[in-house]
Image (cartoon, rainbow, N blue to C red; front, side, top):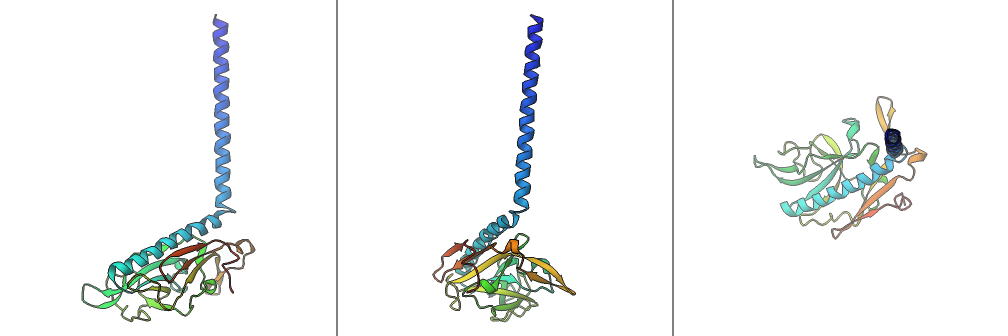
Length: 229
């Protein structure tokens, strides 16, 4: 009886060891997949995530315009000399209102959102967008401060912007404007940096949102459609 008992115990231990081995192999495979995604596919994941983030910001800006009954703008940081980390990756929402001191000007509706690393707004391939639509702001601020210029802001840092009217409809200057995002990298350029979109590996990492005049938003994921005319 004793030898039989020992044999079963040995087999059970061997079986348990095999299960452990399979678990370890599975963990290695999962880890390899994560590393692969974070490596070669990482920017693709970041691009998709950025598109969803910006879609949420657009909805928030429209809701803010309706809630406040005020002109509202999506702003995109464009001051390379000020903060390179935020350059064309930092999005915010401002509206024209009156602060607690009774001063009218641009007020922050949120604290701003930074897109995943390596993904940038590209005004050059944002169809229907006027690249000259820029303003100077001190952001974020709950009091107006210097942000008293209705058109140009009046603050200290440069931003691109998209406008929504007080009913949440896209500003009249933009009929079905695109908001395009793409993978890129900041490279040293003398005492400053430059944004480079020329890496062949990033060539097709482009996506966009169509901001329609009537209020809807349509994602565009075909890189052949998201490029200069």
